[in-house]
Image (cartoon, rainbow, N blue to C red; front, side, top):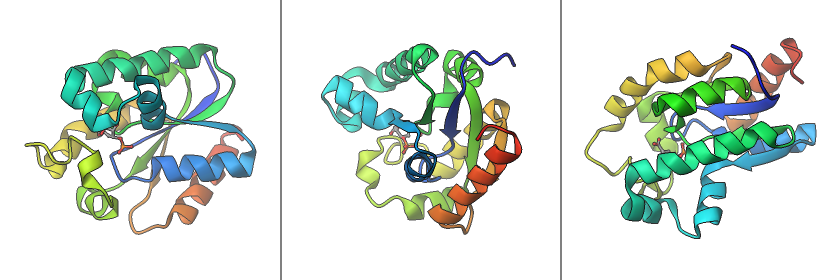
Length: 173
Ligand code: S3P
């Protein structure tokens, strides 16, 4: 896969720790970080549940794709993505070109137990159980990943250290 930029991109299911790991890593490495969900909320002037209610999941996915496109011309950053960014083929393909993609693995039960405010995640309160949602996405996460880090039973600190180590080994940090 030809890389068109050199960002560090965190993907994985809701509750895998992407945002917290990105913040920690950015602080340690003195890098800029962008949280996709927060960015989209700021741009839209709405919360994610409001965006889903007003524009549907498609409208939300279109906003994710817009941000990914803009990453082609942004300075090197750590980007923590929303858990469903991989479901659109176009987003997933673009994602792979934007830099080193790190997949944070988690299982559905642990993910759900880590999420303190499920009402902020429209798809967690929707008709598809988290186990099923994760099962349909696994192949997309695996397909997009350059690196995979298991987060099960690990703290944010342990996961950040593991991600940092893996990125150093690849010469990315
Ligand atoms: C979603 C995950 C959320 C957010 C939105 C949709 C998903 O992000 O983008 O609620 O489809 O899995 P987090 O993974 O940061 O919770």
